[in-house]
Length: 582
Ligand SMILES: [Zn+2]
Image 1 (cartoon, rainbow, N blue to C red):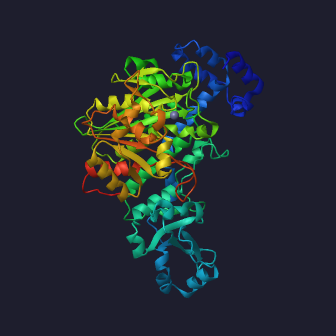
Image 2 (cartoon, protein in one colour):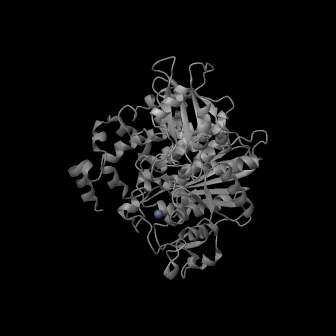
Image 3 (cartoon, rainbow, N blue to C red):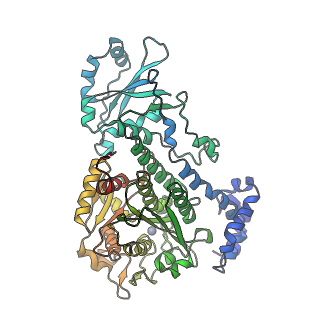
């Protein structure tokens, strides 16, 4: 864009044209400008084009705001604790009886006639097998109080048959009050319902994304971060005595972290905010360290593809490699990699408006890597963990890399860029080569990589690839155990020749008559070129977003395959005496 038009546009049209946040900016204190100048301007000698970017005041003032979401996300990822109580005094708590439709009749036989009459008069017939139905039964002895909740779990068809997730409808639906698990039918137990899973579903059901909503729940973190449960205002569950509470807290807070990161707009979750999130997370675990390699340092440290893809982004969204390391060097090394494209415009091969609409989620892989890391760290799995995140914004600019450019990866392989929208594989390639240099026992990468994976398996099932059948099988078993759906696609070598280039070692997409088919496999085959064949590798191609709401899974960012990977690591490296799982 013409710089003069850019600046004029900002002054003339303000929030309507170029910047959505003008009302905010005008209300922010002036010292944010000072904060920004101190923090960023000393890094700003890279490009001549930088000058024009700093002329406009709007992005400068917003910069101070951008630190808040990552602080909020890390510090408040256990905010579901508001919906749980430690109290030992269960006398005042309301029972939640849990059934499935098949045993409702038998259950009613053992209940009082007034309860049966109440259900009858309310036409409580859970006929819609899909949905979980529940009803509050009034107390006979204490008018105005609830005697119990009767919950009939649905058939789980909206969760691929997982019925216990239906319990997640209660935190947002049930009346405020103190609850405890009451009668749980045998058939419900047979469906995999445990007190640990009930608590996890309850925690997920409590998820909302409050950062931008309203005034009280918005920027005032103190309101949202309040963890004290108050049954006068919320449904609060007493932790079941036989529940694996630490596992619930670990899994749920990792899920909250991932969802929050993905749902945060790109304006506030750029590469720097992803790094800040990693740093804040690491601060909570002694011994965990984070370093980053930013912008031209990427060239010096030989991450050229990350640099090239991120070169078109503005100064405040400079490309970086983020590395979190934890654990002892004598422990088995596991590398978790994440694609962190904070916003994917497609680059010069720009996406359509509808194709770009959800692209704030393109850092979902980075969020997943940090989510699994937080589970490993909080459960103290004996792993030497190395999280490697390639964080860039794929932007349109005079500095953007171009179709036809030939770029060289960390291992020296050259790639002809046939489409700048196939950028995720380029930045992951450098991270994979780097990860292999530590000879890990396993590399897992997470990436919102291709639309083709969604075409193949839809939005709910996490696609994965692996060069190691043993690990792939174990991952499939783990996913089944924890009801976290994944499906393996093949690294079919017959398609590999589609990535041959006349000018370079590889192309970044398949072109020609076969182009457009098998895109997820081609992306995985491209990545495979950067993995040492002796190192077991799992590559996830995930949606990382719920396009519609279900109980416990509201529309927005979502963790997919994360519990499956954790279960895999837990079964391989965890202690046999603590085999808890969700
Ligand atoms: Zn893309």
